[in-house]
Image 1 (tube, helix red, strand yellow):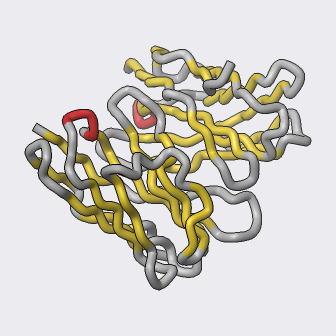
Image 2 (cartoon, helix red, strand yellow; image 1 turned 180 degrees about the vertical axis):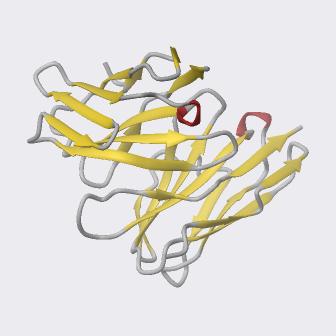
Length: 114
Length: 109
């Protein structure tokens, strides 16, 4: 079974630029999550989708971050404009709708804002 | 408190047992998890325990849960250098997951 795929793996941008990350979850997983992991901290949930609907986006800074999952499969997370404090690893995870809700994580995208 | 708390560092000798401790926040948490993160990689689920259990053993891993104190621990028997990583505990209220800051385990030969 293929795991959660993310791209790109690394991105360096200047502040005020925009950036987009892509995630392809495990096939059949209805729930998709985006996390922000700042160096030295645990992941913090940004947004959760079930199929193509948003379940929780209470921690998403909506003035600059947006995310979509149009067909209920792939998802993109965008930052526009980026700030220095957005430097972090952005992790995508997916889970099946039943069972233990265990989440499977992708390798992450490391974003550096200069 | 509001945060899932873990000690930041643990260092052990190869072959010894490691015990990583965690205090979680919500007594209603349904599942509690331990994840492992190696450098440059995403989080890998190691094991989980359902809230109505107090112990779970899986090969070299033993999870202990004390619901009264909201305390979770992970014991790794016969720790190897390949176990060096950051270990995160997480609590789940079915769909909302909250992570600790992680414990960096260093295994010395």
